[in-house]
Length: 57
Image 1 (spheres, rainbow, N blue to C red):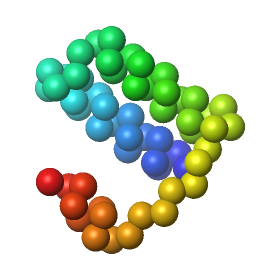
Image 2: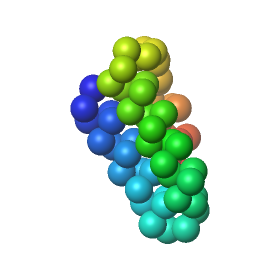
Image 3: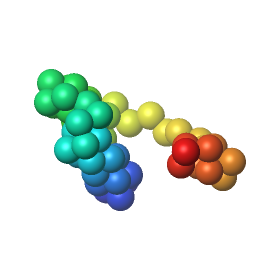
């Protein structure tokens, strides 16, 4: 679980630093991320290899 959290946070951080998302969006997204991962809103997701490869684009 922590790997998923840290990887997602890192993506948001890079997008923020790269100017893709502004500070307000970054804060909202990381707040939602925290809620999903640490406050019981865990929703198991199924993802196949093809979806992972498509997401890399």
